[in-house]
Image (cartoon, rainbow, N blue to C red; front, side):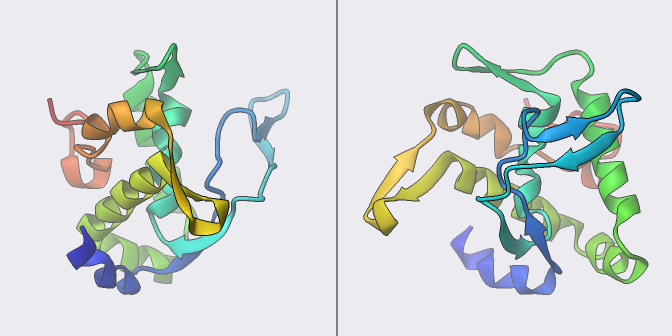
Length: 154
């Protein structure tokens, strides 16, 4: 992965929330997103890195395990469809021309979610729930690459 990091320069930068979860997404009475809160972990990153949260938005962590409810794939595909449809056309062209790189950026974001620098960079914190499911998450393929197949390799 380290050998590919320089390739991320091709991707457009965006403001990544990096703590996107159901608690930080406000929804109105018609189930429309009306706001997103809790931006203190936000950072400007290459397109895709912050989207690793799709696993926690469409799936669920419970009792230290990751679960994919029956509607996981529909939610995950809908998420990506809206992301691609929502970016300006000039950015969409760059993104669509670099799907493998977007997928790599998502996986890198997953690693950042599993391991964080603590104490001003003096130690590494570990999210044990994410670390346990990391092999599955690192087999992830965005829908634009995998077509009709499942999100994770078996």
